Image (cartoon, rainbow, N blue to C red):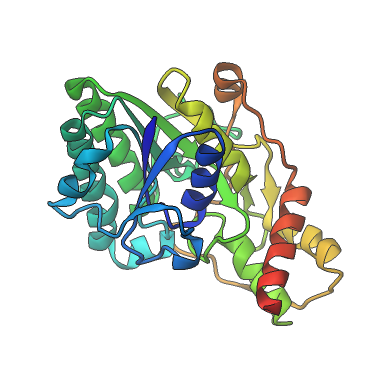
Length: 306
């Protein structure tokens, strides 16, 4: 089976590519390298260096007989979406609609969409189930919610099965400073450089941190299981202050901290219920937060020593 991954040179795309290749899938990557990393591309990868909004993308893909699309390409920064909502709309809404049209034209049978906990907004009823009302508090969350609506509407019209995966806060090696799990990369970078960690607000804000290989496994299983809307999470609420304490143990460092003003658009509590995906996909996270953080920390230490 041929699977197209948009944002295939990115953080999550790279781990997803490996998981699919390890299970015999032919993988085609599309990336414009605005945030993707060329170091994530292997010599035997099939890479189309294009923007997902390019009108001629079909011409580059039509001969691959693509059966499924995993749509990861996106603008993922909440602060950037606040500063430049027009760009966020273009990347996340226009880009998604164009990929849906492309899926129809290619004759794809399945469309997987990377959504986010941000669609729920600042809802304290944690852990949040998929049935909770969507009430985003940032342009990023709004664009992801709108993408979901377009997928549900157009996939029904086009006869394409869709799977919407609402990620918790994804982290791991190769990640950038953007995205909802970017705080871990930012903190590790500062620990390595012996710099002060800046914490927005009081540090009591919580997130549900999930290791990237668990996300890749969910993608793999989503290709084989019924469509629908699923949270992909650990079902565990962890505060930024707790995260800092774990990083102190892993790094062996007692680094300085500085608390600053909260960021606009940030959610205070976030934790997703994962019961639906664990039952329907027989999926569950394999990595604890401590295990994932240790692998991530070691990977960034190794990278910085090269």
